Image (cartoon, rainbow, N blue to C red):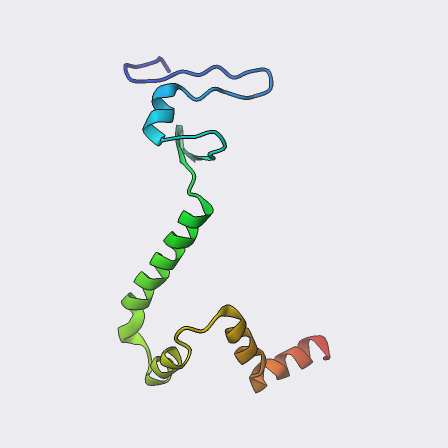
Length: 114
């Protein structure tokens, strides 16, 4: 494939490294230490700046909230009550609750003999 107008070029070093062209660095607002994500789709390769850990967590919780709203109308009354009871619980609180359920204890005893 021949280079077209707007295509940028970088040379692969003997250590398999490239210097990201300045136009790309500016476009993606890259700083030293930033990570890139490469997506291979057929014969097309795209690169984008990877999300920071904080951005990943924020994106995760936004998606969870979106799904919560989407599926809320389909919850049973029992599920709605459980949602209200557990509102604001930490992960550890969920673990303590579910670990204490009789069916959880029976499963652990059957599976691990404990």
